[in-house]
Image (tube, rainbow over all chains, first blue to last red; front, side):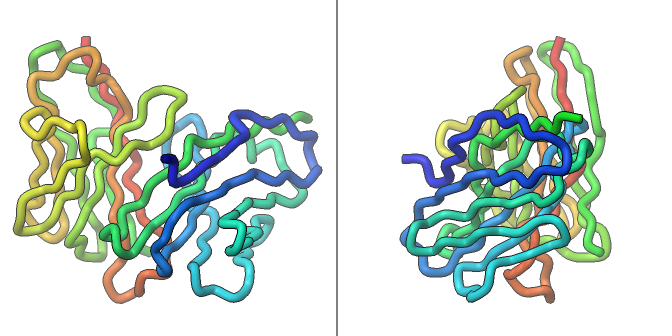
Length: 115
Length: 119
């Protein structure tokens, strides 16, 4: 069974609009962390935001925020005021403490920002 | 901040030859390094975990003799693709999971990745 599910293979969004990228996860480990990474065509992995399983508040980093719904096992990424440079592949990932902190990735969402 | 430096960024090799990819942790010591492979338009798949001073652990389905991993020091982990074939062509990327001293609530640091093409 997939541990990280990203149901949107691709999205097209108009510039300056907000966009939500979906991510659900599956774990029985009480201690885990959730990440979002951006991967442009160059291949580098750019860290965007992190949410710990014990964090009470949703994480925010500039234009990025993580909508953490623990009971639903959901960790959606919200990008406000999208920019052309946001066009890239976005990966949701999870780290589980009892799996030696290995980070596993979802299949990703290709985001296209339209001018 | 902590950086993982990966080299080479790209390599083209002939079928049957071996290729070594290096990942160095700069300004911090990495006791563990994760190695991933990414085929075009696919996700990152964890291949193996290298551990300083001990044998690497491989994920199910990954050939140990094909992908040799060595973690010789606290700042260097290497992946050697032995007897490479065209189907090994992929993007390989390393990651240090946590930065010692910064706790577990932090990002994982990735190398820049290596694009391997076997012809």
